Length: 339
Ligand SMILES: [Zn+2]
Image (cartoon, rainbow, N blue to C red; front, side, top):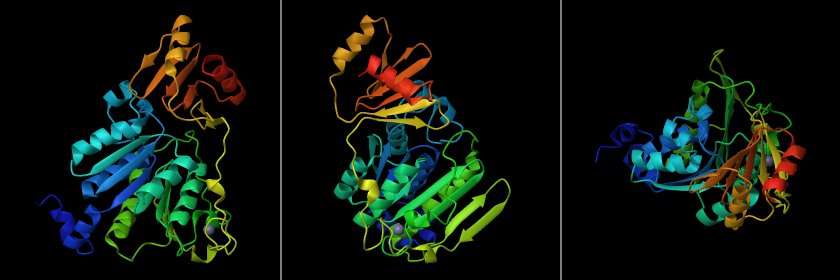
């Protein structure tokens, strides 16, 4: 089969490298712009398995840069993990694609990594707390991970190899990783692909066992033509709570309370109930219907609108309330309609 012939001709991969890629499993956190492009590249490259964790569904504003998704996905409000899996299977039927529609919290990530033992974790999230969880899980289970971030026309990437490189927490004080997580300054698609080019090139090296991993932090601006490689190896901290001998994995401490979080730049509050899992939704749906609220539903979520607020309820209990940045207001609405 000559499907991978061009990739095999590339000497650092070769036939053996291709076989190695085929046996490997990648865990992808986030299926937005970075996630969609990472997933497509690796699936086309012929990896064995990819697990995709994402909590969101496809919206129209995603289509400009989240290359796997179509207008139909947005119309149907398909969860990104599900839509991505569908398109990826159509691209390469040999790859096992496992979508997980959920928030990438400490409990879930640790569970998945302990169970699946992926060969590399790729960060495609835009959320700093999630990156700290990935960072701790990576150290605890000795799995390399590849940080990636972008905003506007600016991007960053860095490979963290446990017991070798400084971890992301080691860099926090010294390196400006503070890529704004808000959508407020916008983003252009080319910077996404630049970050993904770095992430997937390093991922392929890890998957074929090539030791020439780039240990520098890469930062660039595709609009202004700037490109920098920053040597960070001296920044490894002897007392880092994530990667030193005295590690405590602070991001893996679970919390058991209902959490309300403003999703920056999106006029949305996310609610993660303390008690997860399948809830008895029939009672709630009839309660809403009796109040004359029209509920739309697909296999993964239901949604309804009250005044200017749109509620999206995933069947694992997680809720998005669109149309507010106010946690107090979101709490009131949540307990009024869904509590
Ligand atoms: Zn560290």
